[in-house]
Length: 375
Image 1 (cartoon, rainbow, N blue to C red):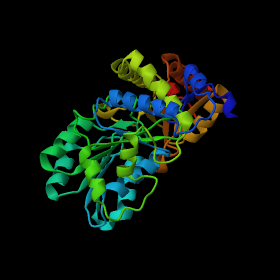
Image 2: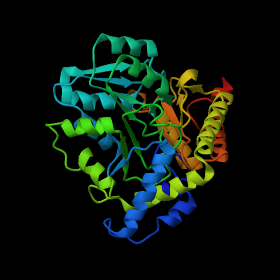
Image 3: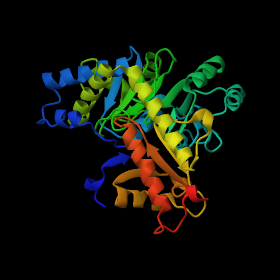
Image 4: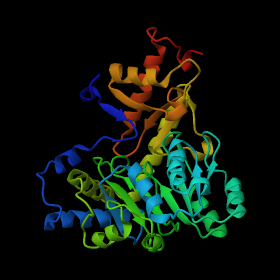
């Protein structure tokens, strides 16, 4: 089935664009050193600061979220430092691998039980056991549909450590409330193409003064495209370090203005409400949620498949028969987890259609497995 026939895209990104956004980004290219681009940059900058309730200057890079994650390791760690990564799924493990590539045996990992958030008692033990230069963690783990208790985790870390706190909220930014300054974060990573309803091509790295000062002290840093001090100096002039994705900038400019008009708290409440709807419909249709009740994500619902039912088969049939695109699990969960995204531009009807189609499909005699409803 071609992408043109997908009418309801519920993958974790790139997420659908509002029609108003598609119209807004339909512009001719301009110089990224021009006055018009500087105006766009300024709107994006102030919009992100309002969204995150921060006075810090966001750094905007032409890259994927993965590259931005790696840039935090390069900018903030020296080869002799010790770091701890907190993982509750595939992307937390990815963060750890990045840290381990630089630090080797000085890269430590605390992994949550599958489908669970980080256990705060285990985190406390890890913090007491030895000092760390930095702690890397995933806020919203899209592979498992888990959201970590970020506020509580940061408060606990601050009680026992002066480590830098680096947060990957790539699948949370735009859908979840993250008061950067109030929660005392050092670094936050996001992207345009998920909860921020914009084209891919831009990563967002919010860095406070403490982390920025640390990046200035690094002596073994060799990146040109992700040099935080240089990017920060240019950001103050509303300029990027390298050639940006103009469509990502225009899309984000429009999305942030739209979200501000709606009210950011209303946007977050919409995500809470639609996540509740998704989980309710999942249970009504007999599906098992992969994440535990205390840590359900408000941007992704992960469904655990029964033995003999392949998530990849369901995703392919939803696409070909119903025009609905969903995601499968990551890594070892490729065929055992089905992921339904509800971040950014999404309506109640979009979610109803997913579960209605799942119910119809699972009842079909043409399929090699039975519906949970028929057990």
